[in-house]
Image (cartoon, rainbow over all chains, first blue to last red):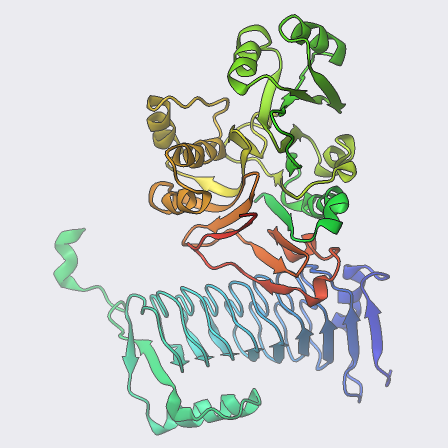
Length: 231
Length: 295
């Protein structure tokens, strides 16, 4: 290979496309594969392990680029539930909006959403970095364990509920914080982190100082003995 | 799981294609609900003309005709698979009484001046074909494909539920307090034909509307009094409205263009609609009523 390959979901079965991508080797080109006519299909580009550049033109369904390792997947459209869920590494870039549970349980890599993400964005994230240029819905970063969630717009209700050690940065308003999630001081190392994510996501015109930091109050880590009579 | 769809046409030139568009939407929601399917189509009302959507069950069209002619003479009957649309100037009170007292072998699915409603068990693709959905024209319609959880796979357990004149409801989700709500509605005089949770929600919305609320306010009341998971699409002859519960586990996507508003559980149900790639596509927020309709 060496030339860009066009894959048309009108002509080729989803399973065949996924198998092809899962076994493909990297080539030198702007994009190795362009996928057209996804028409909201589910589980497109899941389980990729190689360092490929893939562009999807159109709106896709559930679990797009799930379990991604190494691949760089760009979606020119919206995505449904669970984009990049359980991602290990690589980059997934959504040019439109994302539905609920974007980047759920992700272990690594970078998920960029140019539009808004709806509820439960980054639920149980375990090391992934998620950048949302718009806003996120309620219960985002619920039980999030590590990694970073950076939101350039607003956040919905119960942000960071039952949070472990994920760092959350929000530029806009937070409707409400979840249980055990508190606002924390921004230190120089946080600014460096924000600058890095803004650069990687090619976001200009936003200063790192405009963000507020939210994190775990760490009060749910251990059982509070004063509550013993309640059980 | 279940799949729900709705299509409201802003541009009259598409009215002839409503059935074709809705067929495609329901067909692609087959995977979300393979147990049963149904749909409601709203057509132009004619003054003093009522339409009764009736499932004949085991009765033949001729037997039904003979029986109904014993009570009323001036009727028009159109057959669609095992349903008929009975058109007459007779008012609902009279027809409902006749059906209840003298024709209890058939099931009334819904009635009104505008609504045509059909539902049956089986694969959605077969149902769409059997009822010849693509032949229908109209101003708006809603549909449902069911994966049964709360009650048995029967015609009565299928959606949409119509609990008042020209009103209907489809639901993706499950309600946990439907028995309590059903009991309180029965005390108020409502009656129910199934054990299904959605029928209770439909009855609840109808009872709110009968107290004088508009569709939007009636749906807002659901947020206070219905417990469980839901994405609802509720139809009236003017249009339809959508509501998701505040947890919003059950999906919904809206696509709006100058010509139509489409709602579906998944985007793939609307991928075939004209101009979809230029539509404004968004996910409705939890706990907010979205509505479209004629003034």
